[in-house]
Length: 370
Ligand SMILES: *Cc1c(COP(=O)(O)O)cnc(C)c1O
Image (tube, rainbow, N blue to C red; front, side, top):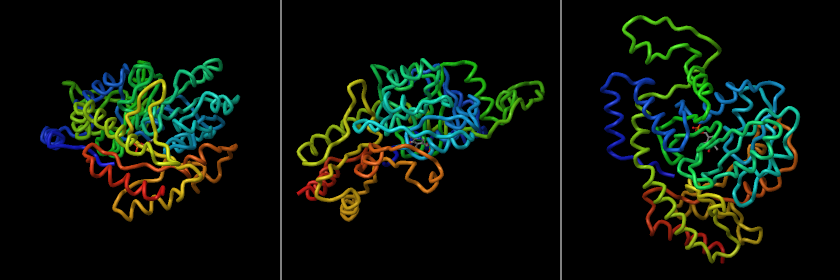
């Protein structure tokens, strides 16, 4: 991944600096409104990262010790960590081999009397089947929260991911499609949740620093509950606003490059490439391929050969339950997760990726397949 940034982003950041208001202020408010509109949500609450967004969401819902939250192990470790931050237990559910996402069946099997929420990840931009997962959670009143860190610009049943979502968390890390350096967002339909999330990200303060600054009269703030400092800066938001303007073109280009990879790789035996699911479209934030067991070399060897030819590929999505940090977490069998994390790799895909660069990547893979 390479971030796609231009002179406009540099100018917008400089303008924020020159304005003298660099912490959370008017540009953050503008970015929240523009972002929420883009994903079809009612409220946007900007924060310092997606990890902070996930933590804040669970804290706001009062999830804590003795509670369980269903998550995929097959995700960036922040998904699991957010559950641990509030003292709850992550319960790992297995994933679908084609989408790398939780399925209604795997979620259903993981639900129990202590389940307080399901954290559904749209992995690498691949939309998860939200309606189907909701259908198995609704009878027990369990909320389905979305880790949409990578999913800006993906669609689900004809709408952007985030449309009609209860609560979704987004990331603006440079590895994601829209970047502010670091940064995150929560979107929600619930006006009371939005108010509470705004307060929690700013130390639990009754009035924001920006509002106090704007007021002609002194306002004495109160600290209403235990909060955090998870604010985004106006410098970041200024960059984010420009990135939002670019988004449609960036998604179109990624999807076109992904389609070209699929065509170039179509005849490689023992290899399958990620594709859109029946119910939506991916932004292909991650373009992954999986190797069959009979592929002549294993995944790590293929990564090594790519690196040798100057191609920076990465292992596919990690599995949290296999990491030392999670050694103390109990879990059931996760066969698809373990197969996927062992057999998948992510190919280079960025806005300026050229035809020749793609052909070079494919040539190394074709050679390995022979
Ligand atoms: C990147 C990512 C995160 C973490 O986002 P940050 O903004 O870096 O905190 C969380 N979940 C998933 C699925 C991610 O891909």
